[in-house]
Length: 225
Image (cartoon, rainbow, N blue to C red; front, side, top):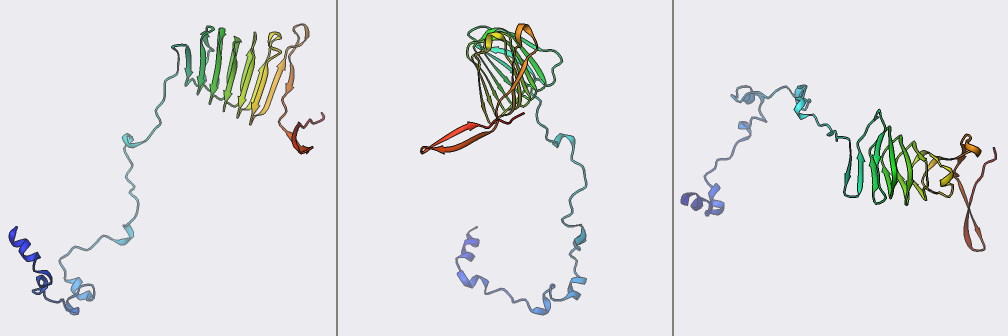
């Protein structure tokens, strides 16, 4: 190792013993030299860069894990998630102090027996909810083709980014407030007289805003039938 450092410390003189390679000795300048070379030829350029046709083993295939469907009570909150096309309604016995979170339940009907505090629904397409009564609200986000039937009393329904929703109110829930944001095709069905058929009432989707007396005033655009 000491001799190696001694050679490096010589500076530019370390290359004084090297011989200059003449042009006639360069293989890339002389095809005749390449022909007699013992270096093996490279593979045909036509195969370079070509993707391998060897199939990947199944163990390398990436697949999203399937989460199990469950309906469990954690503390005072019911967690209902990952149901896909459930054949039977998911029935829960709820209490006044409990809330319900429903997420990723597609083409599934959920029945709440009793009076709960609140219900939140997220990312659940074609989810049907049947409730007796609630203390506060049903909050629905990004759940297209949602359906709600209220048998008792319900103060508030909140719909956010819901494309297609049907709400059936009972005679006890005629004072329910329905708040919508970025929604379309929302219909509220009111009970008929003497237990008759429901009367469908579509919620407005289009607003007109004008300036009046220096203020912006928004009005519902009603389309004549």
